[in-house]
Image 1: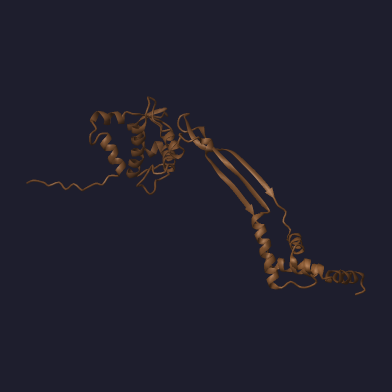
Image 2: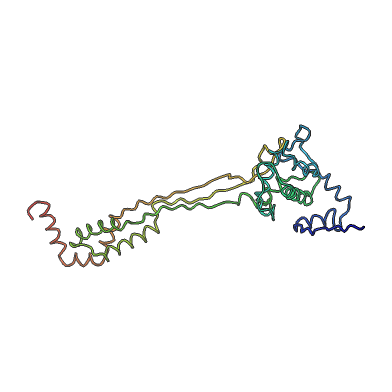
Amino acid sequence: MAIKKNTPAINLPATTLEQLSSGAGGGGSLTSAKAQVNAPVKNDYGFIVNGKIPPVLTFGQLKSLLGDSVNNAPAIQRMSLDVSKAPGALAGLDTISTDGKLSPIEQNFLGNYALTVVNQHKGADPASIADAITNRINPQSINPYAVSSSINLKSIDRPDINAVKSTVNDLYLQLLGKNASDDEVAKWAQVYDNYANQNPTSQTVGSNTYSVVPVQGLGAGGVTNRLLRSGQNETTTENQLNLQEFAKNKIIDSGEYKAFQASGAAFNLMNQIAAKDAGVA
C-alpha cells in the first residue's frame, strides 16, 4: 500500500528566500553553502566555546551557539539587544527575548541576520555583526561630526489675568485718574502676552554633537564602534520682564495718556495726589 506524504506549504520571509537563492538554494551550490558555514565571524558578543572565548567564530558555530542558553545566555542576550536596535534588522519578528533564551524562530531570525552580514561582508578580515549594526544606525558615509540635535528651550511669562487687572487698574488711577475697564485690561494683557511670547524670560539654544567612538568590552577584548555624544554647546539669554514697568511705559506712550496730559487734567490729578499724601485732601 502506498503512503501519500502530505507536505504543508511553508512561506519563508523574503530575506530568507534571497539568502537561499544566493547560497545553497536557487542558483547557488553546495560549495557556497559550505563556505558560508565556515565563514569567519568576529566574536563580538563573547560566546563561549569549550570553556574559552575565541576572538573569531565560524558562522556555523555562531548559529549553533544561539541555541546554547546554558553556557551562552549573556552573549545571546547582548547580541539580541544589539541587533534589535538596527531598523529592519529583524523585519517580520515583532518581539525577541532578551533573557538569553531564544525560541527556534528567534534563533532563525538572528541567524539569518548574521548570514546577511556574512554575505555582504567584503575583505579578508572576519565579518563583524556589531560593526554592521553600528553602520546601519549611523552610516559611515556620513561625517559623524555633522550629526547633531538642536536645543531650543524657552521660558515664557504668561500673564495672569487677575494680576494684570490689578496692575493695570493701579496704573490707570495713577496716570489717567480712572479705573481701567475690562476691555482695557484685556487689551494690555494681550499686548504683554504678545511681547512675552517674542521675548522669553529665558531661552537656551545650542546643539548636541555625536561622533563614532570605539568602545571596548564587546567580546573577548574586542572593540566596536558606537555613536556617542561628543559635545554640547548651549547659550542662555535672560530677559527680565516686569509687567508693571512694561504696562506703565506702554500706557505713557499711548494716545490716551498724551491727550490726558494735554488737557490739563493730569496737573489737577497730581495736585490731588499730592494733597492726599499730605493729608489735607
